Image 1 (cartoon, rainbow over the protein chains, first blue to last red):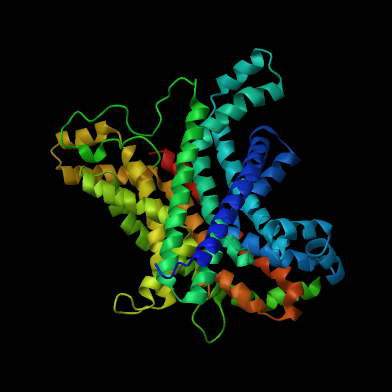
Image 2 (image 1 turned 45 degrees about the horizontal axis):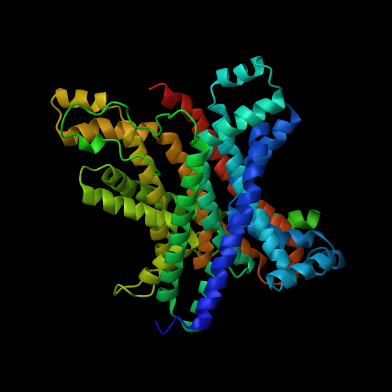
Length: 268
Length: 231
């Protein structure tokens, strides 16, 4: 383990921390944003809905990496060089961020996170919309008949039921978002992936550092899977138990057909 | 405005097919990489997805472990790992980074496709398999002629949208400097400060190309969906 000096470990540790911070921050922004856009697509008609549809299609169908590069390196070039300097690289907010994050150019971090948020929220909006679409119309009609207004219907029917229905898919997407944070290293942000690459450049110990990074990412994704499963269970608490999973209800009557036995329920 | 457009038009051919006197690049290479990765991945996925639903505990364990590992690591890291193993002679031979990219995309696609196939197999009604068995099919026949085709058909929309995801995610091969669409955009712009004004137009064009492919394919799937339901 001579390749993993204390200094190196500290650098990688700070990378892990940044990866976690970016994951949490982008997830916390993208999830509500996705719910709002998805709700608009599911419930509103007219130009607002067209706008939401455009949002989903564009930000979902352009790769996250392209969006990160666009916002970090291309977008500032729209402005003249003096305006650009003031807006993105040299003002009070940016200076404050420099002190807090310790990054030389904090704008890149904001831009990369912005790209990730747009991409992930586009995906989440579509997942939430199809969750809402799976709510039986009687549930919504019932709420309206009982006198709930649109807002109350949203808060007590669409939001919880839609979220419950879409949560497994949303979890998968949020984990995908965690893995996508590795792409921020292309905007020279010292996350786990970037720090591993710099370690390799300095020591030429590629196998060791790549394997280590892979193990950390694996740990992060299994940790996230566990946390999201807890959240899923919390969402379903007090709900009538529905048969989850897509396996057939009836077990095979013939013996020896184990190949079609429903697998143990859970994340697949 | 017009000079931005002129820059993009001048390099559009590079973004689409790469540079002259070079191997195919740009969007064409993105599609080749994705198609080969998805095709080989699908073959691997049928095996792994079936193993995930196997009667044998060991097969299930290995298949699920494979899926967990491949899906738990970012694609950019997976690319570097596979490249490290294949392209640097660790196995006694070396391959190009293109091969490493194709192999990685194959592994990556197969893990997601295997999961989809496994849940397709889980959705096969037990009656269907029982009927085939009663009619005298062996277990193998029941699986190959009834279970697998049913599972694949049910999961066709999911498999196609996964394919679209792989096309977009293939942009990560930039880490191996494979001259796909994303890498070509960087090459077209170069490091010259003079090209700085054209970054926006170029990346808008690149985004539009990815969008066109992904959106067209997803619309194609939607027009297939009624046909799938009719079965």
